Amino acid sequence: MNVNITGRHMEMTDALKSYIESGLGKVRSHFDRVIDVDVVLTVEKHRHIAEVNLHANGIRIHGSETSSDMYASVDAVLAKLDRQVRRYKDKINRHQPRKAEEDLNYHHQVIEVDHEMEEGTEGAVRHRVVLREKLPMKPMSVDEGAMQLDLVDDGFLVFSNAETQQVNVIYARNDGTYGLIEPQF
Image (cartoon, rainbow, N blue to C red; front, side, top):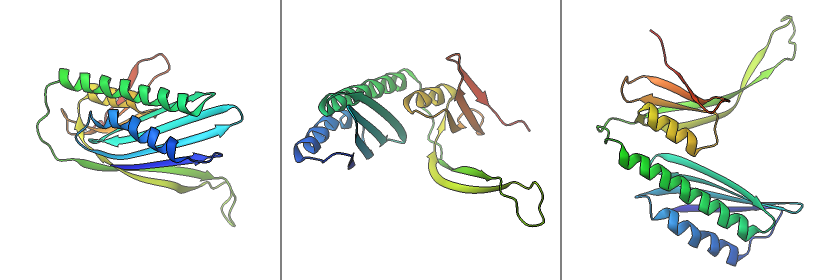
């Protein structure tokens, strides 16, 4: 397991590092393989923020908590991760196992719109890629996609639909429901 602990606007002590690593032991026991854990600790005025990103068994789990004490923030975020992992494991245990299918990959790009005028192009808009990310995309059902979306703090999730073998996008709506975008041929 690769644990990266970063402190912003604070000095990292060995005691705090060992406290975090021992707390992550509980979460580690739930998974066969925990690939990466990124922990970011930040101090802003009187707020102590602990953020954890966990990549394990093909899923991503994110948690963030704020309090007036760093140890309390770490305890709260680890408890939050543990609840998310238990909820995920419970849903997996209630579902039928999927057939072994090949994993797919997709590319995630963030595009910046540049409104600068170039010579000879009046009113032209240029687009520039500012972030490119490659993520594994495993086939999953729509229910599993909704569950995965709950585990991360993203507004949408791109996944391969195990039933239709097509790329779908599931997103959270403002009224607490989910929307699904499917390709039409």
